Image (cartoon, rainbow, N blue to C red; front, side, top):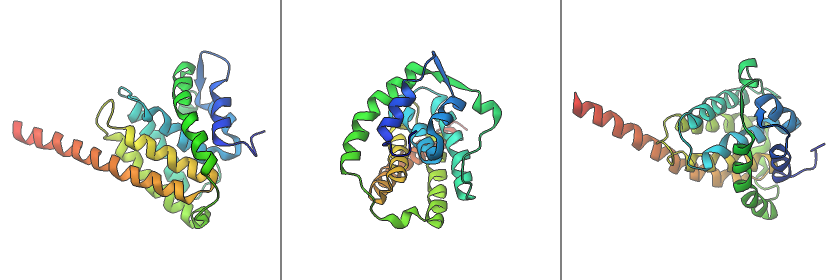
Length: 198
């Protein structure tokens, strides 16, 4: 159904699913054979907007689970049954997709297969390790806005993997380095504050 569809088209199809809430199982059914790369995009999307806890934490944990499976070379993502049954409001999905699709469409116009050495099995496993690092950054991101650079980075990496565009992947990694710096600074500030109180 989506074998030749672009990322933006699949996201719009996801946002148009019926019902007030959308389960992870339903999301996976829409993603089909591009589940790994598009799941990365979807887990980054909510973090591109100011979001309250625990959304960055949940997305970070799920992203870490996906990244570990990429590292170990799984062909399709596996998620625990409890997670597959978890849901989020369709209005939240629509809002995130609505913000992301115009950006993705602009990127898709200039995106093409480049630096395709990143599309090899070994490179994919390395990308899994990088995504795992970004997911850890999400776990410790400053509340509400601190996760935005990491969310953008995750989305760009996922989009680059879908479109086989290594240039987009590298752009995502550069933004991710900024997000990781912010997260490390936040963690350092917390530990410094605790040490001062003690």
